[in-house]
Length: 299
Image (cartoon, rainbow, N blue to C red; front, side, top):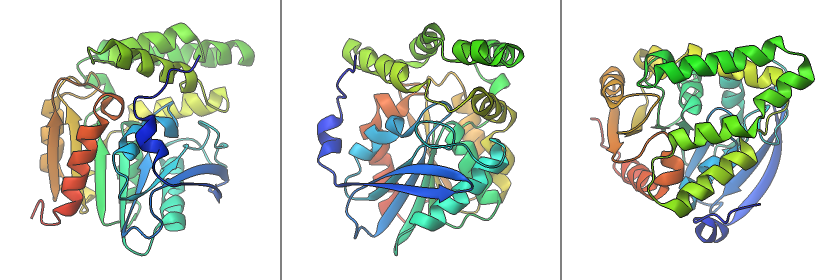
């Protein structure tokens, strides 16, 4: 069953081009929205175990920009990398992606959650763009977050299938009950219809990964790194969009991260958690649009 997206009409009104690119050994699938002649291109990088669908609600509220969505290698319908699926592998892939899709004007890169780490690591490797947007950034080590005990349970959940036979381990990683527990934990909205859609999105796409090793390696990468370790090297104008009920990174850590990034601005959205892209895409898009229009921010 597919629950209709509350943002579908807005997204359907935006021109769409499908592309396939060979990047770092991955056949990477791209969805390019918006006017071809837009003076700003935004490349969006989704989080762990998601795919491009997760960031479509934000794109739906940014019709004036050229926006590029990709399934991370090994997730969605993109094939795995030739290299390991760690931060080095994904950041190298992102460098290739941005060079391949950048337009003649301004280039912006947005990362959500695990994507915020990939973007930050790519900056440290020499990614050259005009602006950075980090949504629900992983501002501190995952095990130190307000739900650190849940992260430790997740470590066990991913460790156990690695010790099982391939087929059994793969099935455990795709278990619907685990997906639903994760979805219920992270969703903060009081809207029953919106929660129903969010759970359906996770049911449909949270298990879309190529093989067991990809998801295990990516999970290890997601809890072994955070944005703060790359902050001192980030000299690019940066917008951080945080949430006051984020179970993964507390707001206090987001303020500390902002202080470490030389040219940065922090927007904290209220009454929302780690699913800003699902629950408050309009507010996130408004913050992004204001940031991109105000080129003097952070100076």
